[in-house]
Image 1 (cartoon, rainbow, N blue to C red):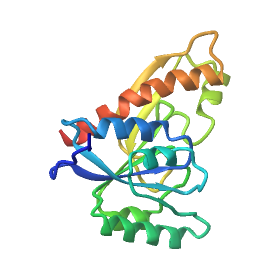
Image 2 (cartoon, helix red, strand yellow):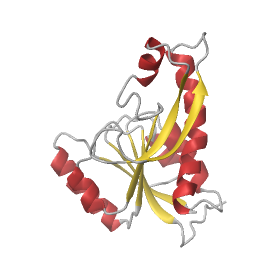
Image 3 (cartoon, helix red, strand yellow):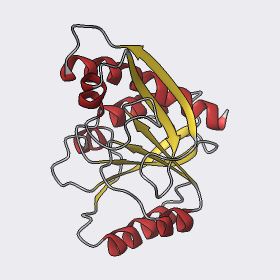
Length: 192
């Protein structure tokens, strides 16, 4: 059965760097009839990002843009987004900070999912830091993207209890399950 992309769905690009579990989840979400988005482009800054296989499986256009020269990379991406009439970007494990210039030129909405309860633990190693500080709770956050790392306006958060037996791996898995629920909910909150 061919996936129908309604003319009223918001043309979306997903930016990835890694395994792509949030990408896979968003592809599934976008194929639902009442989803406000269609995924029309996947951009990765890494040739070997495992997530690219999901784009292949679903025949979604993909583009690899290395960020050796950020200005050049962003210019390539902006042109691509304009050509494909992309109006919305979801960052899903994209390990690059987009410049203010890029965000201004894109002129659409850019959101990200982050594995902590922002503003706590911006950046990397969020699970390790939460455990090291003996936090009782962690979670995930969907927020608007600004040129400042993990600092944009929060759209939705999900809090989870950290158990005494949790380690980085178990906490990562628990939070990832919540990320997969939260990202679609946040997108619905933006558009519906």
